Length: 551
Picture: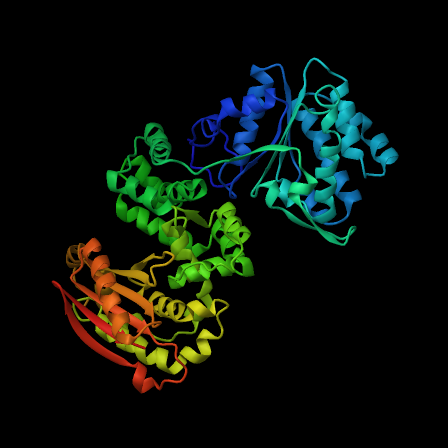
């Protein structure tokens, strides 16, 4: 049986997949190779870059007159600024891969001599020159993966050695070289200990002809991948489940595979459903998404680690608060987050997908949640529904007592009120529901939708009190409560903020099909008393009821 792949390059015998060469513009790449161009292929982590490079190597070696060698230089990352150790790792990688893929021992045989004679400063140039010179009828195409994992002077040395041999191609240097990494080489700002300066990638590698970007899966590609599972096992994804996988992931390859794997294979119970050919449902996808986030899978944890970087904060914080990106935020910061896959431009800047939208505030407030003592049962009514008025009243009191000290703990202080609100909700909602979030630049607000499943509230009542029959629980499970919460920071007058907020809340409620909503306005004026900031009033706006909370 094959599986959805969440780690490393795909293996068609083991993994559901489609031809990696269909994800790249093969005709364009072959044209660049024919023109003897050196170029870049970049994309966020775990999007399939290595799978595409390995497939390209196989194609070139089997279908053309080129010989192609793939190498991964990540092992040299540990050498940091030590060029000697870094080159040693890269050269040994080349020797090993040439032996495996090309059945060629030439590099392995000449390696000790080259390393000894060149003193490592020009060893890569010399090795490639000698290797290309032995077979003039089959020009070499070199694919260098994880190029941006190299550090400082080691990276500069690799780029400059390639550049210095460029004029010798194709007889005595690779006809074409593809550098592959997360970022475009032009965006590198490399700190050189040796030169005591910052070297840009564009200056160190000014022979680059093109920059190609590997995109996410399209909607049709997501459905094609899911269909591979159905063909293999007979287990179908119902229409809503497939649509939700697309909606949650927006085609991010790792997320698609991880969500599908979690849904189909993660537990014995789910594997048993394959044998029974029980369809994958929307609820199963929702549960799988929650499990991925709660476990902080490596891919998601890496994103969380990036949130600590100041250049990431400068872009993400305005998105969380609904502000515009100001002119003092460098374009390079925005491009950096685009290259990481954290944001997209549509044309306005947005978080790339709903899973990232959810993971960002959770990661930023994970410690805060642990110290919030409010419990779910305090806010669950006898019928299992959430008492939203009581819950928001509880947060209003909590915010008054704790906001000044708690917001200061956040790295993202400008977004502190919104983050504290989301931490509080997450703490209360975790045991029986979920929160869906929307952010966007320039809208001046954060949109939240609380989705509460009655069954979990009722299940707690059953467990702790009267032990009703399971049939009653199943009946209650069909009921879902949806509550809209709009968060705004007071910047204009209170009257204007409420007026704008009512219209914005109404629009979100109308889009989600909800009749009741809540507008929360945070007043950050330190000169005002809490008596001036705290209020609650109910407004009838058009055909909907909206409760306005001041904090």
